Amino acid sequence: MFARQTRTRPLIFIASFMAIFLTAATGAAVDRIRISYTSPSPQHGLLWLGDTAGVFKKNNLDLEIIYMPGNISAPSLISGEVQFGQMTGALMSPVRLQGGDPVMLVSVQDMLDDRLVVRPGINKPEDLKGKRIAISRFGAASHMRVLNMLPRFGLSDKDVTFLQIGDTPVRITAMVGNSADASSFTPPDHLAPQLAGMKIILNMAELNIFYQGTGLVATQRYIAKNRDIARRMVKSYVEAIHIVRTSPELTKQAFVKYRKTKDAKQLEDAYQTLRETVKQKPYPNLESFKTIFKDVSDRIPAAKTANAKEFVDTSFLEELDKSGYIDGLYR
Image 1: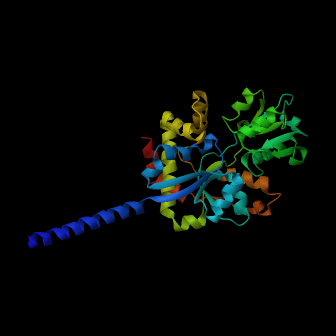
Image 2: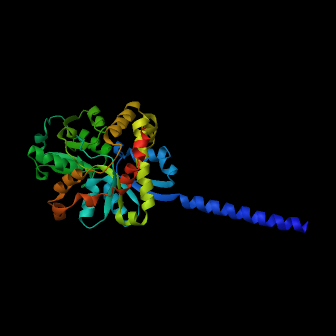
């Protein structure tokens, strides 16, 4: 009896040790990350899809996804409150130009494609002189893209009045209620004001302007200490792009959750917008950053000599690309 107990105890000890070891190893393998996004527009869909399709979990990432307006998102990234941010080049560039260290790892959009929507009675961009333009926030995409557009029609920011109002639904309400005359909307959000009687006078995509839109951003400080996490984040985005390009229904499920709609047309419009925007190999576009530098050079002198290469980190994408991983997803 005594001999049996002495043989059993080592087995129990070993089994207990292995259980503790495996639990610890499993816990250590999953990294918990906080990431912000700045808008409910479809261009943010890769992040949502990575969540709903389980892509991040597959890559041992447990994400807390937080909606933050742009004026909060960028400072939160720099302070370390969030480890990653999904934001536009126009939002992150001024931060870096003024001493911060954000860099873009993945690009979702690198061309202007907003629609300029106006109240009845305004027929062309030149008619905006003296008018009120609704924006979400100063420095946000809805503001910066209009600033880029105005000089192309002989106007400047001094010729219009910008009203900081809020996100898409609030700006539409302001236009319908005659509290604002115009606003810029990303597809497919431009369709809603049209249904309310507003009209499009400019499709910015026709201007063929390189302009760095939404992308995955982190600080160089964080990347230096957490390269494996950054690598898995980029890999997750590449895999989410593959889903977008091959599985419309799975992609739409993400929009149901995060855009809070089950309307079939709205889901299809959002899906097509994302699919047409994102590239299989989502490298940030240096020319798109240069456009932003030009736009902000009057108020941020450092923009006049900025090097676009310092605003991106493509090392993780290059690893995946050169290994054949990205091409392999589509074989």
